[in-house]
Length: 218
Image (cartoon, one colour):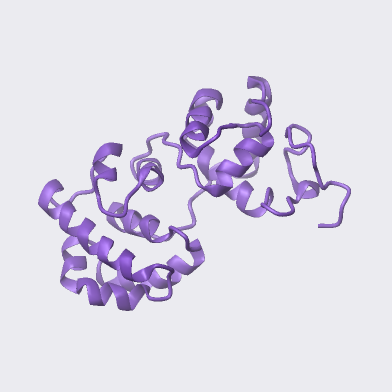
């Protein structure tokens, strides 16, 4: 775990991220808040690409809780059977759809606690929905952000909640809304787990990672 970078360094890191991609977006396809909740819940232990492939057909016929319930667990299962843990995920999709109708009048709630009360929805999923749909500067920490935060010194922490809080505490407020998207994309495509592409990294001179691969062929 690297030490926490100074404020000025973090600010420059995010200025560079913003200069390259001013409006980063998540890669999960969705058409409304409900389909976003479902897509993110389905993405656990699965790739965004794989989830998108499965949900295009699903969301074409079931883009509301009521339509999802009408489709039924068997129908959901048929659409998402290419995704890992699809049987349990199909059950949760039906349960969360029912919970939305019974408790929230079919509307996706806007508080983290309410979102986390939905079956199959954890803190990360709740934060993604709050950030992407409701534009709240919530920080959804996945494996890419956890790795980058600790490796680079942007937001070190022993667990995902600690990293989430470090982002909130140390990233300048003007970058908070897009912070987790910039970090996810950088961690997914540049600061990869086994062999980070330091030679292609726009923040390599600011990063606290000591085992850089800049002089290697990547």
